[in-house]
Each structure stands twice: as structure tokens, then as C-alpha cells.
Image (spheres, rainbow, N blue to C red):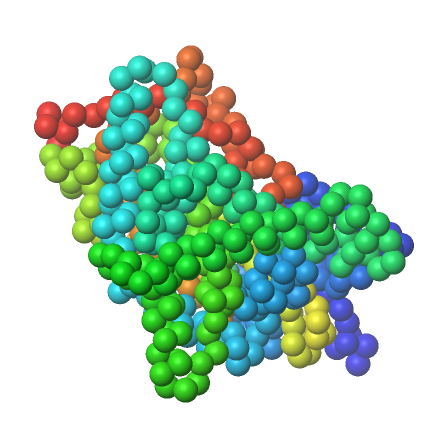
Length: 483
Ligand code: HEM
């Protein structure tokens, strides 16, 4: 009887802090080590918050498939709550009728394959501008900050998809906007000290200015979103096609006409927040890590370049209609998502009712984190797991759509990522063009093995590279391209 009522194993705890001190600067990595010692299902006490960490495929299946309905809520994180107009968004909203309605709108109207395809010209146009920009700097043979270029590209694509206008020529300060998105990510993804530590945490929050910071980010984002929505509502606005705000304003109008209106401007702003937090860094990180891995392995770089150059030929640019043929490139993206999942611990879930994983009891209100990073490096499922080898996906049916629990970069179950198609098509198009248009050299005598592959500590939701990737682009003239 006792055996049946047990909690998952736990490392030793400190008073008050519990296991907080064991999270380390890179929680996915510290938690991976802890689970190697204590088991693939761990119970941690983070201050006052009980957390279960899942670090292998079978218990991940129990969470995402067998018990999905019992644990597909999200914990209430005060920062996320404030930025999302009290959980009016999709990603941080608790499970329930509201989330189901919002999810339907996102899946069917905003991020559907059809809708994402309708924004194809934006992605192709922005990628083409970036290739031109890099071409111009390639004549100087000096290194380009590839990381910065990649992030600015995915930012521009989401900006234009959501708002219908370009950063170029708009009166928004691009770098200020990115800073805002990054700041929002850091306060939305983590509990504050007050949430972790009863009685004393608020003092820490006061000292480090957490609440003031959240308020500042909220007001800056709100003012910005309001301004863009107001622009959309101006009579006589000229548009070539609907952007995301148009689609949502259209749904609001339909609801009013049908007499069951619930979508308001705050709902629209909350979804915009999700698009920026979910869509900019994730695709950029994927391409950035892929480029870094390929630069460390010139043989693989050449293989990917040969493929894209032979399929695209002399066209001058890779377009989205070429992507289906780029089988090796797709494997490179997959392998990158395996070793560097952009959200290594996915987004925290919360149990709504009691259930069991591996025979352990999980109680309501427990926070559940799936360590997708650790799972994708589990030697039980992956040969030479630390090795970057896209070839491992040849003749393999394993994909990232949430059915293979050893590979979960987009999560799975009811809360799985609804932006999967938008994210992958953006990453593939950008990577394919970078490989097609340029050869890439490491700067000034640097050796492949010298490339710094460390992860940036302290960035909570996403897995950034510690140092930017600096590379020298050498333009390839495709009129004479070897095919
Ligand atoms: C390479 C690109 C991307 C990756 C790796 C990624 C990854 C993830 C992950 C791991 C989750 C949590 C899943 C879970 O809890 O099981 C998630 C959720 C989500 N993602 Fe993505 N994402 C990407 C692109 C995007 C894009 C482009 C958008 C939208 C523009 C987006 C919007 C969302 C939203 C709204 C959720 C919350 C879903 C919910 O809670 O119901 N993502 N994503």
C-alpha cells in the first residue's frame, strides 16, 4: 500500500529553499545530471512549489499521451499573467473552456498551414533582403555577426506577418523592440522570488526590481500593440492582404454580428505577445545552432550545400517550393532541434487531478517540466547522443510532431506547439538560402574545434548560444555554380 502512494524520488533538500539551489545556471543540464543520479522522474521542492521533472521518453509519454488531460494546464506565473492581460493568451492560459476556444482560433485561423502559406511572400522577401545585405558585406571579406542577422530576420518576419508592415520604413526602433521581446521572455517564463519563497521572496523582488520591470515591459508592449491596432482601425487603410491583426479584428467583428462577442483588443494583444515570444527566438535559434554545427563539420556543410545547390540550380534564390526536395537540409534541422531544442524544458504544465507516472503519485497543482533536452540525449534511444549527425534520421520515421516521445522539441499533447509549421518553414527557408548563396569561413585562423558551442546561462525559456556566431561569407555566383 505504502509502495503505491509514493512520490517520485528527490535529491536532498535545504530548509525553505528546498531544491532551488540545485537548478544551476543551465537548469536543463543540471536537471539532466540530477535525473541520471536519482531517476527519470524526479520530485523537487522549489521553495513552496512542488515540481516533477521528467527526463526520459516513457514517462514523457505518460504525461503527454496517457495522462494529457490530467496535466495540460499551466501554472500561474505572475509575470506571464501580467503580460498576457491576466492569461488571455494561449501559451500561459490555464486549461479550460477559454483556452479551448482560443486554441481553436490559433490552430484554425492564425497558424494553420493555409494561413502560414499566405505569408510566404513575406518570408521570401525578407530572406532575399538579408541575402542582399550579406552579399554587400561579403565584398569586404570581414566577419559578419550571423547571429544578429538571423535574429533580426525572424523578428522582421513575425513583425510583418502580425502587423502587415515592415520594420524597414516603420517608425519603430528595431533594437529597442527586440530588447523588449527578450525582456518579456525572461519575466514571463519564470516564477518570481515571491512565488517561490513565502514571506521572504518579496524582499528579493523589491531589491532586484522584478515587479517594476514587469510593469515597464507590460506598458511598453501595450502601448506598442495599441498603436498598431489603432493604425489597423483607421478608415481607408490600404492593405494588400490580411495580416494577423486583420484576421483577429475580422473574428471580433463576426462575433459582434453573431451576438456572442468575447474577443476584445486585449485578447488580440495577448496573442500577439505569444507570437513574438513563441516565434522569433525559436526559429532564429534553430538556424543559428545549425550554422554553428555545420561550421564545425565542413563535410556536413558541404553535403548540405551540394544538395541545395544541385536542386535549386541557377535560380539565384531558394524558394519555399524547393523545400520539400531538400531532404538532407530537413535532417540537419531535425538534428539541430534534437541537440539544441529552443525550449529545452518546454513550457511548464500543471497537474489538475491526481495521476501516476511510473507508479509514482502526481498530485494536483504539481508543476510538471519535461526535459526535452535531456530526453533527446538519452543513450537508450540515441547512438552517440552528443554527436551532431543528421544522417541518423536517414530511413528513420522519428519526427518532431509529438508522437515520438524521445524527440519533443515542439512538446506534444493538447498543449503542443501550434506554430510548428510556421517555425519549421521559416528555419528551413533561411538555412537553405544561407547555404545556397554563400560559402562560410571561420574568421582569422580560427579552427573548427575552437568554435564556442556553450549555452547562455540564465536565459530561462529558450536556449541561446553564449557567444554570437561570427563568420566570413563568400558569395557564390550561381550562374557559374557547380551543379
Ligand atoms: C522552431 C520553432 C518553434 C519551436 C521549437 C517551438 C516550441 C514550442 C514548445 C516546446 C512549446 C510548448 C509545448 C508544450 O507545452 O508541450 C510551444 C508552445 C507554443 N508555441 Fe511554439 N515553437 C516554435 C515556433 C512557434 C511559432 C512560430 C509560434 C507562433 C507564431 C509559436 C507559438 C506557440 C504557442 C502559442 C504555444 C502555446 C500553446 C499552448 O499552450 O496551447 N511557436 N512551442
